[in-house]
Length: 421
Image (cartoon, rainbow, N blue to C red; front, side, top):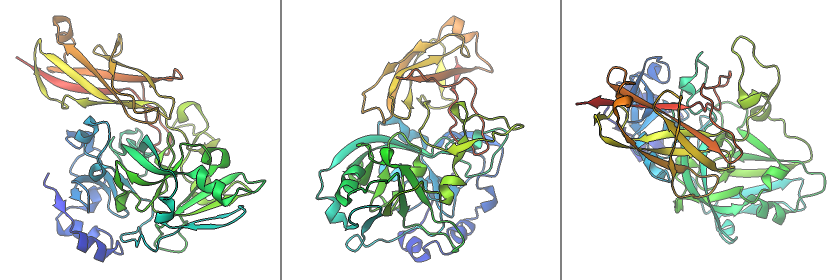
């Protein structure tokens, strides 16, 4: 599909007051197709794309699948997952409120820290760079990654598998800033607000919170760089919260305010949205919904194929290199296995360089097509499964979970090639 480029000047001029609706219509692309079609097909943008969807190029981004136009939700093309780190220009985009920052004067921007502290702070970007810098590799994954694959279908942004990315983040530990402000006795919660705003005053501000003990973990950062460069504005310039191991809903972009609380924060986005069943792996029955719901938190274990190309042609008896990625919520990947017989037997793969427990972990294996293997072909297609196990012994389920929010999908993934000759 031909990508349409959105000019930076036009994008800034629009400032999303009318969103990208007009530019999409001008391109002859129906907005009704965004995330609404049930028919699926395999394309280069990921293992699964919905049929007939637009691909646009936003400022500082490669052409990406548009999941929503307002606010922008853009999916990473699948080929970029063949590297350890996802390039900034291909890193997926997820905003919640329609009015997002399109221009920020970094010289005048300030990060405000207040609430139940000994002294309130207002820190500039230059101030933050005076602290000792910490670098950390971590996966950022949307809570609803793969939501379009849920059945029965659920509401929400209809992501394929590309609402995730791995980056080397650099910034200041949140704990350092909280200590500088001085946490007063009795503090239990910390909330975070960014610069995005709703179209009406009645729309709840997108504010998330963490328990104080989580917020003070040394790996939680206020980051101003990703992959050695300033954050792209669509990914949270000038700083964003980085909460390794947790879903991206907590990684507040364009962070502007941090408040320490004496009581548990009870804002809309913590008590009404992003809730999961309080069950094993957040699973529930569509006919018997869970009555006990809790805020989403740590990521579960996942793995994917990245090569060969989906439905690539390979010859009989050809040696095929399989490769992919695996990650979890911070325990680290212990092993990744593949199966060519629909899960009856498993072969362990070779793990790549370890960039830390919060990072993608690459895996690879060589597969020789055998006579026995060809007996398993269906319509001349060979299909493998991949399954990851973390260091706590948690492994991906053979069948994907279901919940009403379309969160935390992590079932065993399949990948097929066409066998010829």
